[in-house]
Length: 144
Image (cartoon, rainbow, N blue to C red; front, side, top):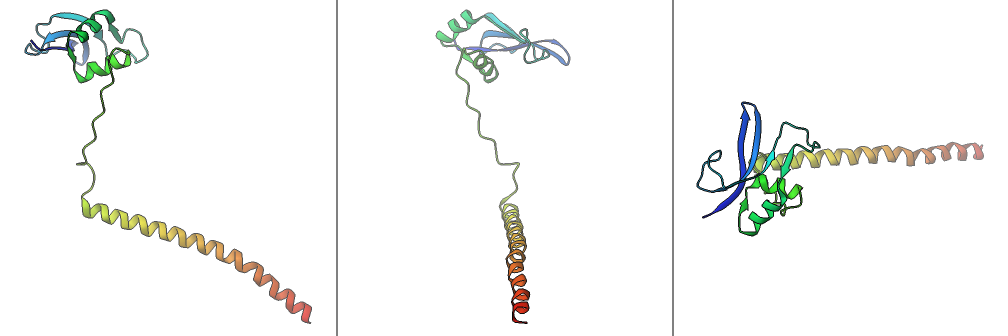
């Protein structure tokens, strides 16, 4: 028999309340379970002590006999130092532009960077030429 530690939903419409239960994987989400080991109330602020209530001893027991937590329960247990934090999966790249659009964006970024460098060079060049221009009238005055 495969056993999971998972959330069973309760509460009213748009007011969820979850029980953390140990259940057979074949039983329905809100159906039959073996043991209730905690509660999770997402409607309470994150720093409130009533948001997550867990029976640490029973959870450790069930983990030791092979029960596997679901992803959400694993995150809750990791926050309470009862289980290793699950790895965050890589995001898909479907939301990013296609290859030609990425090339065009790279070209635009490069052109913008070159324009900024040219403007910096133009701003520095007159500053260097200005002392030379000041020296020329001083030389003419010395000759006269």
